Amino acid sequence: MYEFDEFRSVIKALRNPETGCPWDRVQTHETLIPCLIEETYEVIEGIRIWQDSADAENFCEELGDLLLQVVMQSQIASEEGLFTLDDVIHNVCDKMYRRHPHVFGDVVANDADSALASWEQAKGKEKGKDKIENPVDAVPVSFPALYRYQKMLKKAVKHFAYEAGLEKATSKLQELTDEVKKADADAYDTSKKQKLVAEMLKQVVEISAALDVNAEDALKEACASFGKSFNEPA
Image (cartoon, rainbow, N blue to C red):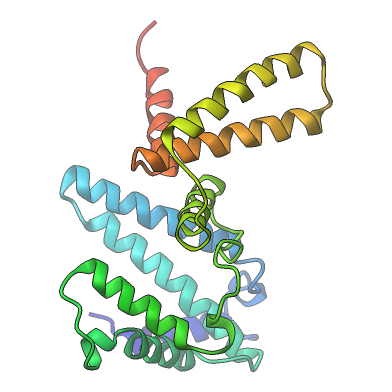
């Protein structure tokens, strides 16, 4: 069995400017972004395959591919003098100690909700980048849009008493549906139509939240069902 230190050596060898792989050694943090995104989604798919088939082989393989992205990004950062893989490991380990006073300190947390509250309280005490003035706007823009809005919505309700609910969202969605019909009939410009569709999608996500449904997962399931429908004989 290969061990982690050997894996690190493999990545260093791939990045060697003279003897390394011509593709690997020219990669940058930016060029690897698509790979990082794809590998993350493939891990999620691996989990789904395991859940459906009880076969964890693909799940294991995809986690390895995701780990490759972490180590490769860290190796490039090390070459640039930014930080090393050891720094990455140290920082995340240190964060786990800080954010889990209910495990490594004297705080008591008897269930998942109280553990999360303990995490958030510990996070709130930290300085610098972990201190967020606007938690809604701080949800990463790189998240899938449906998922991001649902996360933003949850924080808006929690931190700013944003009014959300099934009745409000369905009523607004009906208004927007009527407006979209008029937009099509009146030949509104693309920008106007896009804003109307965006508002409709927001209401759909609010309906999903009210029903305790993950909007991103729901649409993925719909995509899968839609694709399979074309495999059926006419």
